Image (cartoon, rainbow, N blue to C red; front, top):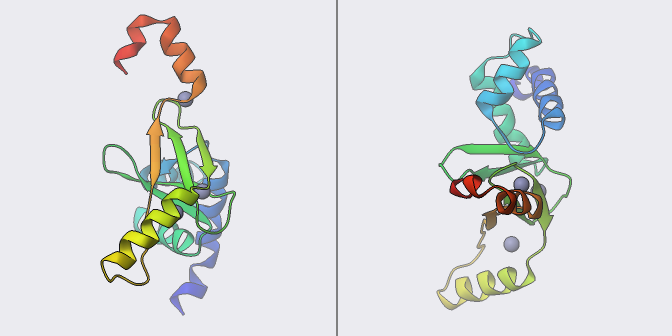
Length: 140
Ligand SMILES: [Zn+2]
Ligand SMILES: [Zn+2]
Ligand SMILES: [Zn+2]
């Protein structure tokens, strides 16, 4: 089976993802793996990341500029993220108000098996403090 044959490649992608700081794109991981001469192609990296994300072992997000980015997830099950768009720091959060709102809104419109993706992008406390120190950085 294809999945069996690609297991070692998926493990290498998983390892590279754990080593990465914050969220990374498939291209970032592919570049890191190429330095190790693994011979893993970009398409394989995309497939491995999709598999890990589907299994709940990696977070998949859209970056503000529309690129799919990934991170090894330290929390299993459904959750949300606060992500710093300057340094990439990510915090896993629960959002009970969002869960209730999503369920009730879906139900009110006759939807079942509703899913949602809610992540908050902003500047973390450290980056906010840095931005306040250097007025020029406010344009970030
Ligand atoms: Zn997560
Ligand atoms: Zn930050
Ligand atoms: Zn949720």
